[in-house]
Image 1: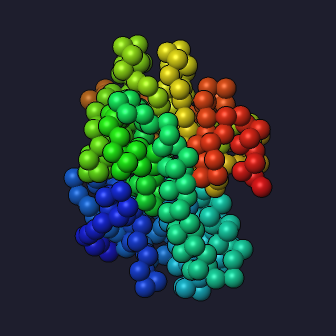
Image 2: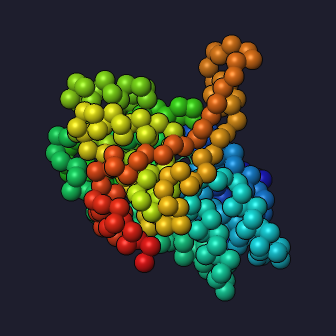
Length: 329
Ligand code: MRU
């Protein structure tokens, strides 16, 4: 993989994925916010490894990257079913990955299909924003978890799209961002991209959310999703479930933003979704933990549908799982 430095993207954040003249570059999100560095991906295997190591992360972004990985495999004359299997195996939880790879596999032109998936993403973020912006009132305080922002998608993000559109419309509001242990997507990515866009951002420890709600300081929560099951259960970054539970206790509305490609009608409920368990070293490595201590690192959790106030999608805002089921059509 070679490197390149750059660049501008949607919502004032650098683009997480660039495809130019048949070459693929991924922003190394592990290095943010300290450095904006792009790594060229020369094969589907490179892309799979970058997805597994979270150079690129966020459900829609890993789908787009994998779609371009398929295009690279096609250009190299590699068997596409094998490339597809390698890419899909990179991370198990976000359904967008398999969705995008299978769509490219079935298409007559892998490159054209990958470019289409990437371009559709822009309109999808706008539509989610338009369907959620009415929830952001002047003077309100929103809370988000992990990064479902521009860096996780291609432009406005999903959970952040209503926030970006409300800001562009001149509304004044504040955004609280959970730091999101252990990979710190909230602190390193969401706080960074929202600040660059000029929003009023306050970073908090994950464990501070309940206290802020008890003080009456949070009006709504908006998060993204890696997969939403047929019954509306939401699989998202570890900590989302706890946030939904404390939101219900404190009477704070809990919204989930997702594109139709994140809805998985084949998963009956959250229990049917594989929860990725990552290296325990990601938990113990950055902190002064005693050598040899056991650690676990589940990357996602399941929020029961009953705790969701509404699902904000590119095709509308839905208040029941039955309405959400229309996304399968
Ligand atoms: O492990 P990550 O950083 O890929 O997890 C990302 C999330 O959990 C996001 O909330 C989700 O993918 C939605 S991104 C629009």
